[in-house]
Image (cartoon, rainbow, N blue to C red):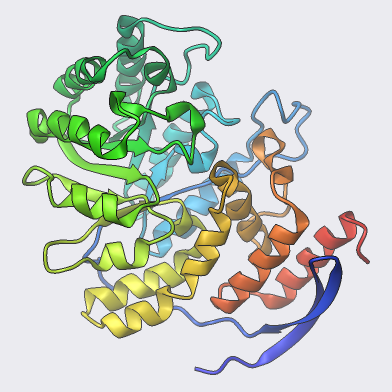
Amino acid sequence: MKRDTILTLKLPRGNGLEDYAVREPERFEKPTQPFTRIALAAAHVVADPLSAKEPWLEAAIDWDATVAYRQHLWSWGFGVAEAMDTAQRGMGLDWSNSLELIGRTLDAAQDFKGAEVASGAGTDHLPQSEKHSIEIILAAYEEQCSAIEKLGGRIILMASRALAACARSPDDYARVYDRILGQVKAPVIIHWLGEMFDPALEGYWGRKDHHAAMQVCLDVLARNSSKVDGIKISLLDKDKEIAMRRKLPRGVRMYTGDDFNFAELIEGDAAGHSDALLGIFDAIAPAASQALSYLSENQTQKYHGVLSPTVPLSRHIFRAPTRFYKTGVVFMAWLNGHQEHFAMVGGQQSARNLLHFAELFRLADAAGLLADPALACRRMKQLLAVHGIA
């Protein structure tokens, strides 16, 4: 459907400014039935800009706005993957705030019919300046898993920087994962986060080569398949994900974490498909929800028609340095009125340059995802003004 131009503004490109025509938004409908793919959105946290805490040192969170955003995601049919890297876990958000976030989200889910929550358990409360023994890392995982289970939560077993720093071989990874998986009360999702998201996780599973690391991980999954719901891999390489997906033990799901190629991976092929646990769902929830509804009805042409325009936006948000993608996710939430400011935990709103934001604005408009163009334009002009562009 042709979208009419309704507003114009000047946006920077290169060394100058250009007129940009903003079009009316796409109209997306909320789902009326469950999707045929499990879809978890890794949700961001909303900072409290009026806190006296120093943003580089302590996390100040607007709890009401943060919970409201989870309700927004649930309303579009998504489950929430809580306290993950999208929430700046280990990148501004510490374990004590993460646990409070998990508790608040689980409480809110009680009042929202059909709300699903899975929460990250890791070892990030261990001092990063020290190397830790395997026993200490095991105890750290046990502490966080126990705390989440005590709240009635479901676990996403996050990759551990501490384990990556101390492990001497794949056997150390096997020892840790075998023991933790042997203790959890319910099947978990294992999260393998690639070094493009977190450089400290390079060589995870004891191998720098991803294919070799994959085999170590597959061996762990095979031994513990009854305690594993699925594996989320975030390597931004669709061929690696498909290769691993085809080798998974029976009953173990692949949750795509590929924010570059998610559309085709979720659709799948004759040999199978990926479910999804994605940070980009935070930013594109209405479009992704509509697309997943079309896929549930086997309307694949409409599925791609809605989701394909979001792929360039996602690739831009997650472009290198990929670890700064949270800035783009929060920028989208601000443009669309889900928070009243563009401030982030850790001061991460400064992690991208103005040209990046201008292109993000264009791509969001191209995908029909500026829900209130007048509001989005006002806020884009505010950002431009802060950078000296009247």
